[in-house]
Length: 270
Image (cartoon, rainbow, N blue to C red; front, top):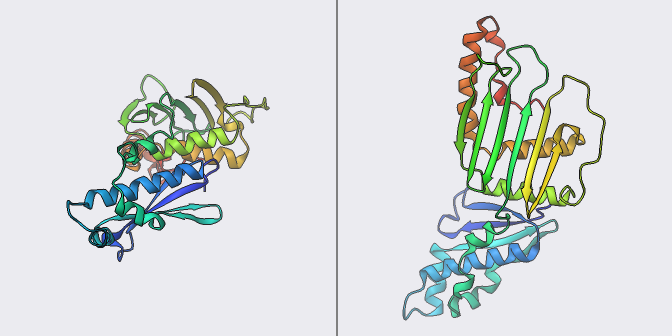
């Protein structure tokens, strides 16, 4: 479980409950009450969608058990809330309009001004093993990546791809940065690593604050966690597209090394 996001909601599709993939996990809740309210709203909405005029609570219960959703909240100590425990209330009382939008509640876990720029470059390796990229998230729904398949030069292409950032990953990243204290305390000065290693620079804005991190100077565990989370902002299909482009470029530029070319985009080198 990622630091800063100790609670998750497990959503059960009751209609498909006999299938292996009938449950989905919603991550990123920093506090118990937020996770519980999300679970409550989602299940109550599930009941409300099935409610019809003149339907008895028993009939509505049968419909929900067949076609609805159930949720439970899991924390560091296991299951701490089940929406099913409030099902009698959901059946007898219509859902208040102000509590209907569970998607907006989840979206509110990320500040409206959240944005970031992440510049990453592989170590000083001989071609064809060096590559660089820059990731930007301008809003929770708008991102771009620029990718250099080799050392930047006038003869090296730059590929720009737009993507929709993964909202859950944005939330996990924001919570992690808060939990590690980077919004309240600037990164401590540290000696630069030996010349030639991979380098990562992150600039993040949230809650009216801007922080800058030299990711390559973080302790190993924090560096890996942050780097992998930043990469996970981009959908796998985008990384695959960039990987395919890079492989084709390297095979055309360095044919003698073709057998060694497992695309650098497939691995973070960290």
